[in-house]
Length: 242
Image (cartoon, rainbow, N blue to C red; front, side, top):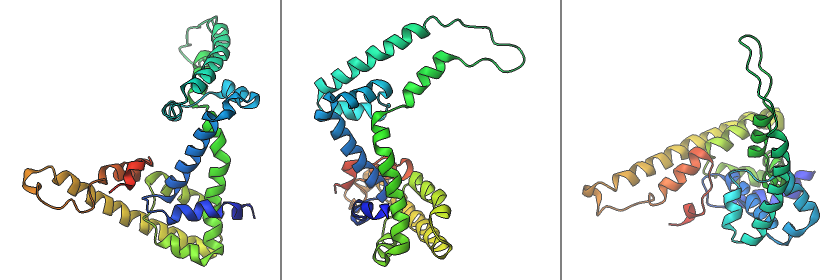
C-alpha cells in the first residue's frame, strides 16, 4: 500500500504536541517545498520552466522571500515577469464590449488570465500529491493500526479547516466498521479542544485587566496564536513556545 510509505510523517505529526496534526504535516511539506525551490533547484531548467509558467500564490511568495535567498527569488521573478509581460502585451489589445442588457455577457480574457495567475503556484503544486497521500494514510492507519488509533484518540483535535476536510473524506475512505467510530472520536476531540483553547484565550484577555496582573498566566501565554490555528488552520512556530 502506498499509504505505508507515508506512515512515518503521519505518526510524527500525531506524536507532536500541536493543536492540529494535519496542520503540522502541511507545514512540514510547505517548509520542504520552500527549501527545495530556494535551494540549487531554482537554476534547473525544468524547475524554472514551471515557475515561469505558474508562478507563486500570495501565501507562498512571502515565505519564499523570507527564505533570504533574494538572488534566487529575484532570478525566478525576473523570468516569470518576462513571460507574463509577453502575455500582457497581447491581452492589452483586447477590445472591450458593452455588456448586453439581457443574457450572459462574454467572459473577460484579461480578468480570466489575471485570476489564474493569483491562484496558480509551483509550491502548492509540489505539495499537493504528498498532502493527499498524508490524508489517505490517516485513514489507512486508523483501520489497520491499533497503536495509531490510540494515538489518534489522544490528539488535541483539529483546526476547523482540517476537521471539515477529514469529515468530508471519511465516508469514502473508511469501511463501515470504522467510519462511525472515527467521526465520533474526531468530532469529540475537536469540540473539546476547541473549547479548551477558547477558555485559555479568555484567560489571556482577562490577564490584561489590572486586577489579574499578579495572577498566573496558566497555559494562556500563547493562546492567541493557538486560537488562530484552531479557527483558521494557520500553523505558527511560536505556538509551541511556552
